[in-house]
Length: 360
Ligand code: GN1
Ligand code: MG
Image (cartoon, rainbow, N blue to C red; front, side, top):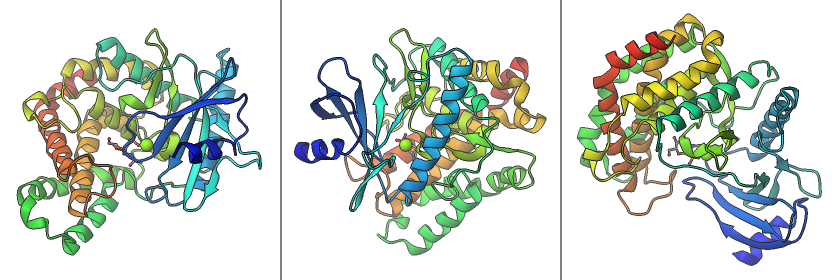
């Protein structure tokens, strides 16, 4: 593998001489490597993009190039450092933002020196800063008007997800439906509620904006002092509602357990983290949101956590091909842990609404 990744990295216009290449993090979808160079030249992130999840990597990379160029301009205008407060895509020697080595697509970006990612929210301050980070991200993209490709069809569209869901249940490829009757009921019980909410998107009351769509904590880059540098993993950056970013972040920041916790007693929503995240987000976005967005802000956490329950369970029934697994029932465990979190949010929903009102 090392020979191979070395060769691939060499296709990109990176500065300096490669010292070593090592796998980085535990991405569930792409494979990520840190490419270290000798001496003072930057280090790089090399990724093998999952072309099953992302059917059109060239389009996805085109989105990322355009979005990061826009963000860099904004950062520069505000007197910031575009090399630290934005991802920087590195092109190949042929001038493309990806390298195609059949059947894989590879992409490279600059590793921001001294940056760290965090898997679990360890403080309320971190939640606040994470919220501010995504608020700023959305704000910088508010005037990005050229259309972006839809990199994953119907990504946060629950109506589309229910269509996929119905196909999965009908197909029952591996005969697993019978074994997860209780879990299936969780998804069925909420069908009407979720589809009713989706009508607000269909009729335009909840506007489309350019959003990140994968805002879990580990997709925000912090510096050593805990300050937000930028949002990373821009693979799903496209047109969506502002609420999807908030909901997905709350799903991850507020969870007192792990996304795949086998001990459900550890999983719940921490209301203080909820408050801090929302406060950070609203410190940037309060004036930009319309009344409908404000009204449904608290619900966004329930919406995306529910969607994640559906997506995990659907993948489990389909044979666990989407998220990497460490053991056969891993994605079922993920489903159950997300459901526990969802229940905790549903119980605390009145309080979540109260807090949002208070912060607005
Ligand atoms: C995936 O790419 P990554 O690991 O940040 C997924 C998200 C899920 C998340 C659950 C493109 O995120 O939607 O919420 O796993 N990304 C894609 O951990 O499907
Ligand atoms: Mg991703």
